[in-house]
Structure formats: C-alpha cells, structure tokens
Image (cartoon, rainbow, N blue to C red; front, top):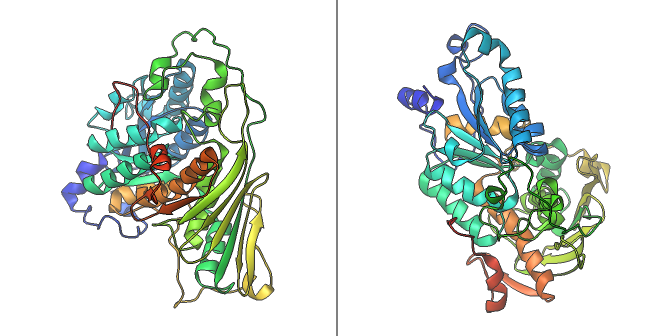
Length: 436
C-alpha cells in the first residue's frame, strides 16, 4: 500500500493546501524493526532524468530519507538508466536479499511511471523544456511532484501553477537556496528592514557557455531515445553538444545561465523584496551570444528591473553574488553560499525577534521539505506559484534582450503593456503529439 492511501485512511491528509508546512514526525511505535518507517508508511517515488543532477543529487537524496522508497527510474539514455538502477539496488541490497524490496524497475518512457498506481510522487530532473509538460501530466495522473528548475516560458509556468492549485497537488521547484542559512538570513534581515527601506538589489550570476557549440550532426548512440529526448521541442539533428548538460545553452530547451542560475539567486532577491508572488513592472538589458554555432542563449548579460515600490534590481553576469542596499545600510555575500556581510555589525548581528517576520525554511533541504509536505498536504518552501513568478523574472529579461528595448510588464495580467510583439515571446508551440 502506498503512503497516500495509508495516510488518507488515517485522516492524516487534513492539512490546508497553501499553508506553511510543519515538520512531520513519525511516532516511534509506527516504525519498523530497523528503526525505519514500515513499507506502508513510506512515500513511494519514481525518479525521471538520471544525469548529474538527477542521479548525483536527487536520487541519492531520496535514498537517504528513511520514509521514502524509490521504486522506479527512467531515462532516455541507457547508460544513465543502468547507472540509476545500480545505485538504487545497491542502496536497498539488504532489503532485496530479504525479499522486502523487489528491485528497481527501469523505463525509457516516463509515462510508464505515471501509469503506476503504487507510486505516490515523482522527481523530474530532465532538460528544462520537459519540466512543465511532465509535471502537469504527473499531477493529472494523481502524483505529487518535485521538479528541477526552471520553467521554459511564462505561459507554461502559469499553466503549471494553476494545475497544482486545481488538483490540490504538492509541488516543489527543486532548489536548495531557501534551505541555506546565508540566503535565509539575508532575506529575513531585508524583510525586517534591518537595512532600512530597500532601494536596490544587485544579483551576480555566472557567465557561460565558453564556446559556441559544435552543431555537426552525429549518429544517434545505440539505445538512446533521441525523439523522446526532444519531446515537445522542434525536430533537430542529433549532436553530442546538444544533449545532457549542454541543453542549457540552446533556447529551444532552456534560457541560458540567466534562467539556470537566476532561479537560485533571483528567488532570494524576490523573497527578500517580498515580491515572490508578483514581479517587476519594467525590464531592460543587453546581452551577448555566440554566432554561427549551436548555442544561442546569452552568455554575457546586464539587466535592470524596476518594481512598483521603486526598488531597482540589477542582474549581471560575471560572478556569483547578492547585495541588498537600503536607506540605512546594506547586506550581501559573494559566492553562492558565501559568508553574509553587512555595512555594520549592528545589521550583521541583528536578532529576528518574536514580533518580526520569520520566513519559512527547511534546513534539511528541498527533498526533506517535499516529503514532509506530501504528508501534511501543505505548500513546500518553493511552491509552483512562487517558482513561476521567479522564473518569469528571468524570462522577461531574456525577452527584453531579444528585442533590444525596455519593456513594461504587468505582473497581475502577466503580459507586457500594450506590446503584442513582446507578448508573442510568452509562449511557444509544442511539437506534435505533445501538448498541454
């Protein structure tokens, strides 16, 4: 019996969707003989996408959770698939010997996992152009979802957020930043006006890629389901520079470093600015991209956003950093998880007291937070609506650079102001037979 059915029977799923999640504690009497929750109390998982992030981080993170059990893995690359099966079955070796675990099933078609009634939740770690489509299909199939960031377009993000709400699903956009003490600390200091009235945010992101990509077509490797890898994206010849990690630099599949790293640091900016459920009203910027190769996203960029409050946000490539400047000082850091610094010891050492705004986090990370919320039926720390709003900030930045002019944005209507030419970039057609 899966965890959803088991918990529903006991009446444990009475939490309100959208509320802040609280940790879920399994009573000691409910644990198995080895100190782990019995099989009937574990959340059953299917993991789809087994590349560096998928297998190296996400699968291993769920294997480390005693109240989760990975039943199946999926990838279009047979080498990735074999590696994923081995990692999972090595982890459950003792249970396999005792007959308590029947083995990890493998698939090249993710829909086979969605068809399984014994799987409660799925983890997606695919190229970006698959994120929303797979997530929506999974939610419609009754699964809860944790998915790598980002979305591909503004319209797709809106469909995802609305689908999560309609079905009452638990959805986590998989980033660790809100669980990291430095990001949480900066956001709380700013939200509680320890630097006075926030005036400017400066976000530093990496540059990339370092070359234009070789577009020379090559034979498709044996067993590699390239048509499924492309999925809803336009038909294109296979070449090694197109797939796996490199998809990030091709606009058919991703938004470049702006969306890849922006989903981390711009989320903290939105969190601190108290705009995580809305967005800026203006954007302009310039960028550079390679010509004559495969990679066409911006590898160098400089953007300026303006919010209705008057706060300006500058986003620049060339190095990872965050800085919040206010009327009474500043706080920030250098490096993704760099030490928090401030303009004065008073700001740096300020305590967040009982009467202050305290921001929800889960120091154990997004995977732990997701499992807790599957049980409580409450929103994780990076739910669909907030994730969509964060990704929208980057998408409109890419649109501004593509058009080469300042754009006015209406975050309530989620469209540009009197600008049908810019609005055309908000969505993309999907290759048949895929559709939302």
